[in-house]
Image (tube, rainbow, N blue to C red; front, side, top):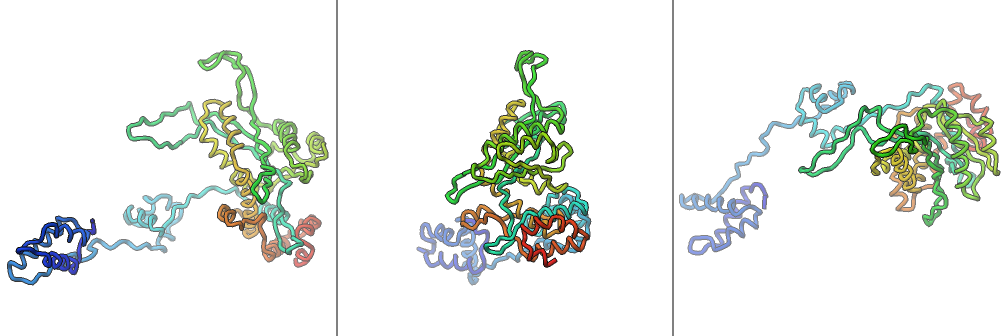
Length: 453
């Protein structure tokens, strides 16, 4: 049912169907219902049009039931004026309400444009500010991550299997704003705290490397070196309803200084690397970190003692300044484990630490491996944008490529793009920087590429 309305031909057809099934001048039993079903209207509607037809027959008029629907008689819809929208500064287009007022049209019109795809909602995040020097450093860093494959003569990214990415992150006991799905009759959850500044939080140091997974999907090395909380144990100063005074409790380290991070590196991260590193893997390992002031350098004597023992040669390296998009942790790994951590309810520091560690262990090695392909795709964008970060992180639909057996181990870089970037560096006075690292670039890209610039 529910056709809505009948055209003139449909009404006439329905009436003639009933006329063909008359008995003693009246429709046979059930015929009006059959007509209603055939023309997908209610029995009441079919009876109405049959009644109109009988009135015309009684007056001796021909049976003709015209449709009085004249088409869409509403006010014509407003057509989107792209030029008018472009003329409005983006800061004045922060909501549908603001945009409707700027254009002088109704709010509902903006809603229809968004629903139809004529307009789209864009959430704009702040990017780290980059100096010209930062951009050139990002460009050189990305170039140094490539090599010329002597087999197929393609410029590819190194597999980065001997790189460990470390970074710090705060994890919070609860979010300032949370979402729940509740029944209409349920009470809304009530949460409170003295101040947002007093929400319990713990800083963690996370270390990950590229997982090793064979062709059969067996995980040889999961890439998860460890996630280490900066916490301290101390006796409770006073009693509470949860514990007595003097009981050992866990508290977040108040100040994560250079000495604290150095201790974490030497006593936790390096031993974890040595314990978990695959037996046949390269023992020269690069630990990549950002440029935060508390981070130590590769020349720190205490670090070197720990890093050069047990046949390992572990080196610290800095990623380019203001470049979180070049660290695996900031490129999706932290976001993933935070999502898992939020699923675990926690009421104190111990439970928060346990929830984060559980989320870290639950993270699939295959997802971590995908993060390294994402990093390579970001480096390609850095080459395309000459070191700038004004680009969207590419989406490769890796799960589809994996299912189809077409997911590459490492991405290929167009040789023309490499030549263009090298020429760009020379033109902007970075020839000495290229020459100073010529040995590495020659190893990575081949002399035949370098000689083109």
